[in-house]
Amino acid sequence: MKLITHSIVDNQDVAGPGSIVSINPATEEELATVSALDRAGAERAIAAAKRAFPGWAATPVRERTVLLGRWLEIMVAEAGELAALASAEVGKPIAEALLVDVTSSCATLDYWQRRAEELLSFRPQKPEVLLFSHWRAGCRLDPLGVLSIITPWNYPVGIAMWELVPALVAGNTVVMKPASASVMTGLLLADQARRAGFPPGVLNAVALPGSATDVLLDHPDVAKILFTGSVEVGRHVAQRCAKRLAPVQLELGGKDAAVVAADAPFERTALGLVWAAFTNAGQACASVERLYVVDGLHDRLVERIVELTGTLNVGDPSRPDTDLGPLATAEQRDTVAAQVEDALARGATALTGGQRPPGPGYFYPPTVLVGVTDDMEVMREETFGPVLPIVRVADIDEGIRRANDSRFGLAASGWTSSRATAERFLRDLDAGAIGINEHGIVAAGEPAACWGGVRESGIGRAHGRFGLDEVVCLRYVFSEDSRASASAWHYPYDEDFSRFIGAAVPLLYGRGLDRYKHLGAVALTRRFRERVRKLELLKNANKLL
Image (cartoon, rainbow, N blue to C red; front, side):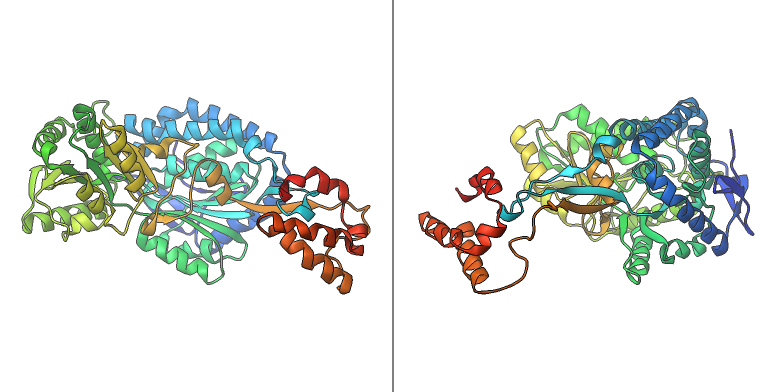
């Protein structure tokens, strides 16, 4: 597997004075030592991005999409290698890395390669104000400038690409900081872009310790920061950027809930919930971390979930039959274990798992908990591990109410065979992505979707048209005919203008037939005769009807 152990700045390998050690979480052995930049090195990357911006912004969108196509070809050719590196760095099974990281990234490249020209094109907008009706007007989507993109370790390819690709194709230049735990995977993405032909300085990837990251937030040449990670760090990012009024997009934590109605499709529900709880060893901000099951189905569904969980193979992520690998870091396993131990000490029961296994690696077994209460940390704080707490509720009303009782709101799901109940779930569950008979986490793999949370789960959206709006400067532009001597509202303000505007307001915005009695008063003014376009008024007479 190809290991990139230097930052990439201006398409050159750049060493720094520090180091980041990449650890295989399955063996706790060192994979490689990556040369890390310091503040000066990060500033060099920002300067490179700034230099590259004018030329890249002026590059036609069609030419940018050609480069996306080349990147897609490289990613497809190196799919196995990229998945193996992500597996080695963060512990997910190779097949799962292909599914959730590489496949979704290929879909992202393919989507923007095909749709970028259309989505970035001028958006015409017919003016509503009658006196503006002759304008040629609309919104233009311009790049913002240099973007800092700070990516997490849990989906080191997938999340990085859903931020990088629209930012780049929109004409921005980027300084990307991969998480230290998955730093080589992030650097390999930048190397692929370099080999695809992206010009120097357009995409710079910096190996940077967390202590030096603030330069990417504080630097005046950075136009916007896109951050994915924990609420704690996200709050720091927002506060830091607020000092210079720099805009941010934050995709933060979750404590996702699923609510199961009595008429849920049984086997699909059991299989779907087990996958949504334990995929990526539960290290997803949109994992199911709270499950509310209506009383009539509770016992039967719990029994089946326990059976399915017991069949999951936890082990070496490089083996094709492994379902769950280790957690990515020792610190994350400590957090998971502490939450489970606290719940067990306070009366919960572990029907599967619940204990750290012996031996090397940051493994933790998939754990199903019952007897949990809302005041337990495992029910209030993000676990980010393979733990599924299950709660019995009297009806879907209680399930929805308790599902919404959280400071998070990234994704959610409702499980039912009833169309009416499905509509109720979609209307009343409070989250950024809501699925019926599939958890909302799956929407993260759809490049045309709208992805983002409410409350402490984040600010802004990724993916598709709404995500594109996060990485462009939307400008309203309009054109006035230069042949006209003056507009109706230009100086001077005189008695004639007072009669004109005094009659125009009730004519335009009054109600009922009485409004039309002001038409004559408007038409008799000199302002109307000399400055108002009568033909345009006739063309848009419907606005007066």
